[in-house]
Image: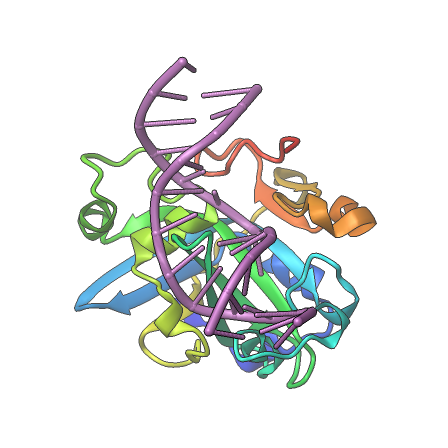
Length: 203
DNA sequence: CTGACGATTCACT
DNA sequence: GTGAATCGTCAGC
């Protein structure tokens, strides 16, 4: 169980990092409870040249400035006024790349996750979808800009390996507004995993 | 200051 | 399949 280092997050190709994050374990220590889950679905957001990215064209605001931090920070933001979406910032300072964690498979602290989400029992809806992941793990916008090398939120490698043919690749979900960039094959997931959403579907 | 809207989810038809 | 919920963010005035 080793925490991922700067050298993992600082690499240049965010798409490769998104794929590499599949199978790693996301751990949070929030409000006195530890929860963790294996990452089974991610999406890459390729900085200033990606129309689907908040940082497209170099947009730099109070919210998006977190994406310009060095790789290894959390970028959390509120969507639709309800959902907190968790991203991992990658690359080096001033290069706003990020990977959205769309789904995890619960490992530890399942009782805490059930409590946070108000669900009665573990099922595939607990941590499927980016809004649900953050809710179950207790991640909120106040955790944006948090370092992933601290003790609150971090990602570990437990040696879990996935064969290439077990990783699926598709276009991203919910970014139809991004024109031709919506077609890019930037979404990665573990095939036949119950916690992966059945998306993308047309919207 | 104001208005429009979203990297979603869930209840309901 | 459709539509509401709900509020921080951001562009524009």
